[in-house]
Image (cartoon, rainbow, N blue to C red):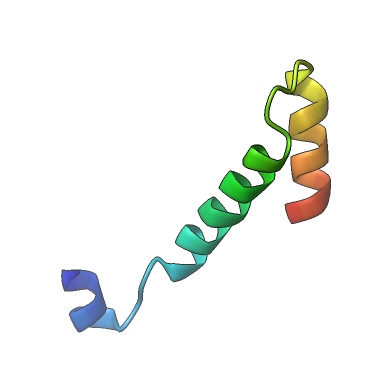
Length: 46
């Protein structure tokens, strides 16, 4: 919070990415192949 007042910078982009990953994870609940899940995740959001 102090960083915002000093530099006017926030962690909104990181929070947005976390929200996207959570939504993606909830869509594919019960995934057994973790490597393929990470592959799909990096292809979509990288």
